Image 1 (cartoon, rainbow, N blue to C red):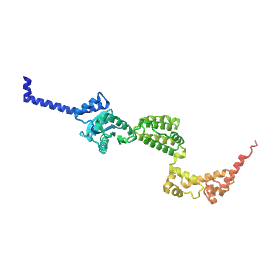
Image 2: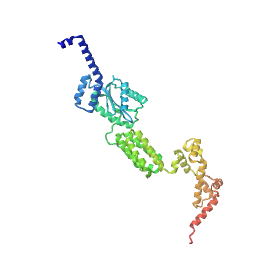
Image 3: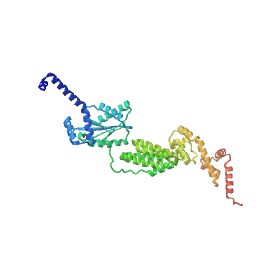
Length: 414
């Protein structure tokens, strides 16, 4: 009787309406949690995924064949819960609830299924998310999005995007990757690194060749794009070849770099690290002349050596005819690096060469020596310069050479 009267009473009707409103309100409030949990379990294959998916579609009126794009976002660098929380809130703000069909977090990843299909629009939204994260939270993120897929393909799409995310190794951390742009390499990689040539160049101190060989190695690696773990193996082998060339007392220091190679987040990091160590060790192995001089001054010195007999050898001729560089700049740089003026350096080279020719004991006349060291037919001027440089005239130096050879060739009477 009480029940019958209650059902038809106005107060009871109001209570019933409030209860229904509360149930609906609570259902709306928990719906995002239910949807997020559903997606996580569907992707991870928890329980009867096929039955669960069908129940989800029926409950929320979702078309299983709906076209969608799927996105994975992940904090770059230190991946912690706080950064992932920032990414989730920022992504939801920019993409909008009306465009997010489903989303969930799995470990350190945010997985989003969106109804936005335009590639440019998705890329633009991800760029805005990234910019806001950097400005507001000092947080960076990596992003990859899928080709157009049906919602039912979420588990397989998630696995593909995770693999693609690994290929961010070949790009800057602030670049957005598109699944179809990534050629996933599951097979053997046809790479034949010149480890021996790199090791020889480092050991001999040839920094220019080291730079060239390392550039070639990394260009080939980035073109082949093997799986990141395989790429690190190649880099590790290269690094070991390089550090074998350092001195024993420094080997412990360079061995610590092996851990860095193994844990590097990008090919750019690895390239900078290995090139820096390679050139550092090559520099330690280089002859003194190579350590002191820049490439321009080394070229200048080589040209002087090759043209020492040329009486027209001058800074202006060398800069304008061979190196095509500004004569004043070359002169200042030459003085800065060698500590000598160009003309004084050439004079010293010529005098040392003249001394060697005279001391060889050959019967060259003085004017012939003058010609061979770049003084042409002006043997008188050569003699003046020679005496100023050595303290004796060429003839006196020649006599000294004769006496030296006679003493050396004289039989020992003892």
